[in-house]
Every structure is written in structure tokens, then in C-alpha cells.
Amino acid sequence: MGVDEKIKALEDEIRNTKRHKGTEHHIGLLFAKVARFKRERVDRAIKKSAMSGGGFDIRKEGDATVVMVGFPSVGKSTLITKLTNAKSKIAAYEFTTLDCIPGILEYGGASIQILDLPGIIAGAQEGKGRGREILSVSRKADLILILLDPLNRWQYDVITKELREVGIRLEGHPPRISVKKGIKGGIRIHSAVKLTRLTPQAIISILNEYGFHNGDITFGDNYAAEDLIDALEANRVYSRSLVVVNKVDLTGGIPPGFPTGAVGISADRGAGIEEVKKAIYEKLGFMKVYTKPRTGEIKWNEPMIMKTGSTIEAMCRKLPKAFLKDFRYALIWGKSAKFQGQRVGRDHVLQDGDVVFIVKR
Ligand SMILES: Nc1nc2c(ncn2[C@@H]2O[C@H](COP(=O)(O)OP(=O)(O)OP(=O)(O)O)[C@@H](O)[C@H]2O)c(=O)[nH]1
Ligand SMILES: [Mg+2]
Image (cartoon, rainbow, N blue to C red; front, side):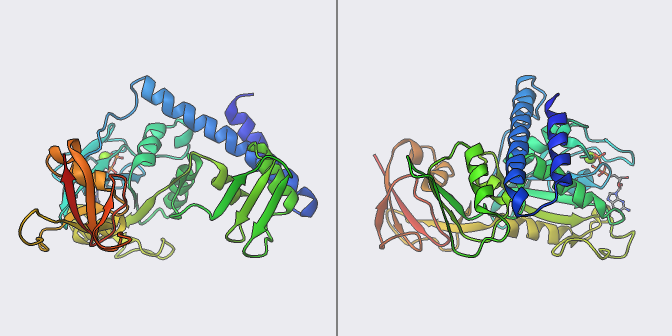
């Protein structure tokens, strides 16, 4: 049996097993096995597309990268030509775009790379279309822009399912579950709330499947088996997403049933483009940091725009080369400082509004 068939057989078994206390342990194991096979499949696909040179040859540029994911002909190329300087072919037939086309959007002081991709279709993660390459660039993006057709609401479910299958989670943050490996004494389970979706047996069997036999596991919420597996799997990525519905000229607005927060646009008429720019910028979550000059005043009207969670090192990369090459340490003032004027290294994580003075060799 190939991996695909093994996964399918396990998923059938999960579907056909009645869920109750007596079967939780077994179902937990099945979930863990499915997760392992899927991880192997993703790892192999990524390696394969990289080795054969079949992956998209794209260098990350700018302060953040956004990928456009959507079914063929929803208007991805039309949208990128409105957002950036990119020239991407637009046509009324499907699979017009066959490669990855980059463009740069300058907005709010940030330089945002946007990637136009071929259309995605159901079965992408199994290799349909250029599905594997699309999903593997999506894993590396800072924001996934999901572009939908207003007459085909189902596209959203297919896309989110394909993303899930390759370990991309759009919910934003990993489950609050911590595991501390021990040497002996078995597994001790701790939880802030009552666990109603996982029995102790299920927890233990999943942990065993991941090679944990002793230690402490702590749950921050009433999680299910899938969440526990997410916490144990190393290949999960937690991405931000933005849903945009194009061609609302056909429907006179976003029809009911689309995700809340979706932005309705009409790309070829240029309607809603500013809203999309603003939404991209806000979703990416930039912060402003300031450099303190050796002499004179801080230029509060000239912030450096950085991705939230950026380090001093990332900041140095935006400055002349010597700042990184001859970096000794930095002094910081602001929210990320334990005390004002604290001395920190290049790995220090900055916060919005911080002021930084870099000391060179
Ligand atoms: N009615 C309407 N048509 C649009 C709109 N935006 C784009 N289109 C049309 O939709 C068709 C497909 O547009 P593309 O931008 O090539 O779509 P795509 O998503 O890049 O397609 P692939 O590259 O094949 O995946 C073209 O005929 C566009 O003119 C819009 O806002 N309203
Ligand atoms: Mg296209």
C-alpha cells in the first residue's frame, strides 16, 4: 500500500469507529498515525519539488511576503496588477498563470512582496495542478490571501482543507499544550480546565506514538486529539490569512455565508483595492521602531517599519551593512526593555515604539 492509500484506510477507520470512552484510546492512535503519514508525504513533496528544480524559484524580498491562493480564473493576476507593479497575464480561461509572479506593494512605509500563483484545485496536496509547489510557498508566507469567487462559496472550504493537509493552520496560534519529557514514573496529566474531549488513555497512547513515555503534559484548554497532535507535530505553521471576494460586481456585494471579515472587491473595475491594501497591511501586523542617532534628536516622523516580532538583527539588515557586520550590542528604550537603556544582543525581540541605539565595533 502506498502512503495515500494508508492514509485513506486510516481515515475510513476513524470515520467508521463509534466514538465513546472505550474507543478514544484507539482513535487517538489512528489520528497520530494519520498525522505521521501526512507529515512524511509533505516532507517528501517539499524535498522532491526542491530537488527536481520544480519548485517556484522565488527569493523573499521586502518586509513581508503575501501569497495569493485561489481557484483558476478568480482574478488573482488581475488583483496583483492593481496592487503592485507586477505584470501578470490575465485571460478568461483557466490556468493562465503557470508560474509564480512576484510584485511589490509599498504601503504605510512597508515594502510588501506579493506572489501571484497558478490556480489551486482540489487534490492540490496530492500533486494535482502545481498544488504541491503552491502549498509549499504558502507555508513560507507571512500572510495567505485567499481569493474567492462570489458564486462559489465552496472554494473556501476546499482551500482551507488543502492548507490544513500540509500542516498550515489559519487559526493563528498553536494549542496551549506543553510537554516536558521525564525519565521515569510514567505520564502525569495536568489541566487548567476539565478535559471532556480526551481521555487519559487517549492522551497516553498519542504521547507514546510520539515517543514520550515519561513526563508531564499540561493542557491550557479543553483540547481534542487533533490539537494534541498539532502540539506534538513539528511541521505545523500558524499563518495569518485574509479572505477577499472578487467579482462582487456580479452579485452586488458579498453573498451570505462567506467568512466574516472578508473584503469584497471588483479587481478589474478597481473597486475595493485600497481596502485590500489596508487589510493586508493590518493583517501583517507591522510595528514602528526608531533609531537613536549618536547626536541630535530621534526622528519620530521617520519610523522604521518592521514585522511584529522582529529582532535587532532584522533591524540591522535594513540599515547600512556595517551595522550588522560590526555589531557589538544595542541599547533599548521602550516596551521591550526590562529597564530603560537596557543593553541587549542581536536576538532581542523588539516591540512597537522601541528606540534602539546600536553600538558598533
Ligand atoms: N466580472 C469580473 N471579472 C473579473 C474581475 N476581475 C477579473 N475578472 C476576469 O476574470 C478572468 C480571470 O482573471 P485572471 O486575473 O486571469 O484570473 P486568475 O485567478 O489569475 O486565473 P489563473 O491564472 O488561470 O488561475 C479574466 O477574464 C478577468 O478579466 C472582476 O472584478 N469582475
Ligand atoms: Mg493568473
